[in-house]
Length: 413
View 1 (cartoon, rainbow, N blue to C red):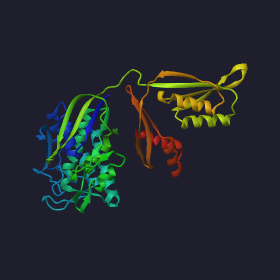
View 2 (cartoon, rainbow, N blue to C red):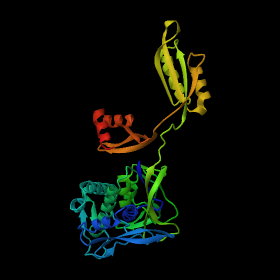
View 3 (cartoon, helix red, strand yellow):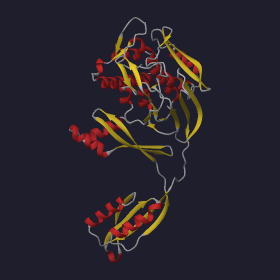
């Protein structure tokens, strides 16, 4: 599976993400021609050779009327776009405090000469940003405004990342835990803690870390892009790496200041990936109540699964075939549980090879709230299924049918 892994050990900002993805592209000149032909007033995009701690990479300079937006966090931030998200008004000497509403930003994006799917993803990123800022400031989304000049280079950042990903076409995107920085950052309303409230809202449910580095390492735009595109967050999967890209930030630290992007194929085994023990016994002298209790206790005492099937026992008696599955190192423990809680005097044990899809849990956002989704993948196969308890809870709370909620969750996958 073609997989993109984004390593965010020094956070993420729109320009750094675009630069890292740019380094993975085959036609870098074509990408820059497109970015400089977007028609955004006064906006220019330049890929500049850069290095950090001796590592060569690219800094993506996005300028408005020849000026690159500067950071506003007492000099600690490592990126040019400290608050490229909505809700912050910094005057950069481009004509005073002008603001653009979300509808204005959508208008800018709608006019971009990019594929419709790219424009749609860019709008989705800004919808995330606006919702997070509205929550952070306690106001309706339609009252969130973007600083006019800062918004132009941020639109270029967002559009650039969305466009680069459409060219790379990864089948799966995995993102590392995100380093958010620490300390305080200056915004239009004064000094606020890192991560800024909008960034914190965007990163809910995402593994994050802080550290000794002072400053805002992950910007609202960076957080919105990561959460828009990531299929999962965690360590790098087993990957046959084809290309590596380095998106370098402007500030210097004692450690490499970059977003690193790895593009490659996940290495998936076609053979069995483990062993499992199957414990089996025949039962013809237990009541349904006693058998149900026994199955529950066997599960509690270490079995992975327990099930019964009807069977014909000796002397023509109807009965049940009980099967318990467990890990090899729990065989004795589960066998003892079966002997204790059922009427059998013996059981059979078989060791079997097993094939399985690696499970994980994600969340889908519906109009009624968040719902867990169980995913399993491997061997080039992906299964996804909403969590029953969450779907049922949402259906009860909002007076909906189970099927309506279930279909809504599936439409988000």
